[in-house]
Image (cartoon, rainbow over all chains, first blue to last red; front, side):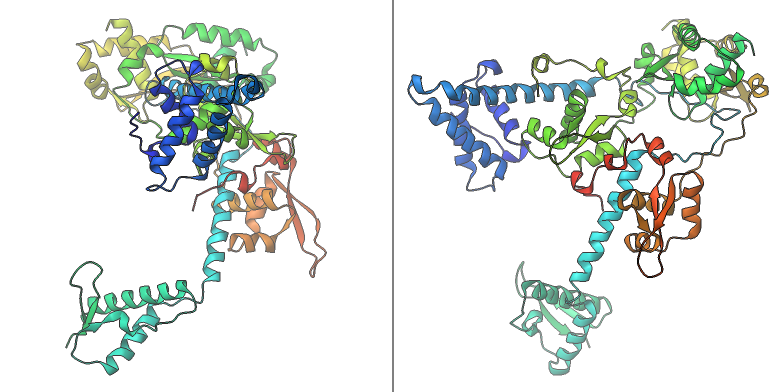
Length: 237
Length: 173
Length: 173
């Protein structure tokens, strides 16, 4: 059986199983778990090299592999595993139902599209007390924002050891005290050894940004022959 | 204040309230004028508007006016605003609406994969879902239910009016 | 589309428009359904609502519905200022609800911004927060907790019913 499925289009293993069971073109209640397991494992096989399969897919694959092996056993040893198969079928049926339901909900008439709710101006007020218009959802979302803001600040604080654009400009000045009138490779002047790759990356970024800054100020020329070729730099006189 | 005036008052209250009003909300206001049969008043109002361009409607037993369904085809032309929700959010919404109150772990079990980051947030943001206490199981996870804005958006009187799907009927989570 | 439907359409258009509608606005919409006597329709509508809780008004030849002036005499409730909570108050409230009991200095640390006395006062005034003893640290600062009206407003049984951050896995930045 030829399967042409793109894994990124599927929202998880159940979604993929559902698609595969549709290909069997039978009632979902009567699908062959054995056949399904074969197709699924085949799919995993085909895609394992090119796409990083998520843990969910692999968990599902091992469950199906287990089921498949049990289903291949002689009849009298199968009984206890019917539960497992039954459970998977039920989950599939249920998930199919939820997908249908979600579509049906959004097929309903919608406010703003099929009807409008009415709110008119009044001459008086309903409440005698001033109560702010805040919902529980507002409160929770507000807290999430504060919480995330805290995280950002913490992350920046951890990384104070990195280089800045100012550092890059300082290096450029030092380089041009030595080099004159020649093209040379920008990154050749970075130290070869850094104590962390993060630090090395930040050095590259700061030097590049500094030189772009100098180009826009009219002090430098940059040149790169091809993609990924060395970036060459020269002082503009 | 006579009965006719009270009916007018109730009508104008519902029309001009910021949020749909419950009978309790309305009764609190009527209280200062005497005792009235609010059910009767609401029934009369609903009847008055039965064949008009707008109708008296309720979601979750809270009352508001909306445009009549019979005008659906004509009004569609005028507006276009619809919510743009991800597939994951739509499925999550369907699960919450059908299984509420439901925990995140239960949603994940049904979907067969983790609930995407931000999925609950996006539903929370448009106020279609809200937290509703915790399940008394280990870890005491928060449970989720749909909020009135969800019912209002789809013109549902109650969660029982949701479309049915045969596959879901016989299954217990 | 018959005359009755057209009248209903006009009614719902006026009801649901954000701004008062001119005859011209309405006629433009009706045009696609045929030719109608809009003046007659508007007169009829005005008549229908003459003795109700809401009335069809026109000013500047633009039409809109408003609650009836006759009701104003019955309702001497003070004019309402629909107040939104300031951002500072929202953030302070969110922090207190999640971190209570919490001192003002701690709120400032979490917010990363100063909290002014007026912010706490505004929350105190509506009885959403209250002081709850002092922290036994240098200076013995007052701690703040949410008050009963806070729970009531948000429909929470207990403060523990608020979902924790890890139950949401937010990606909001």
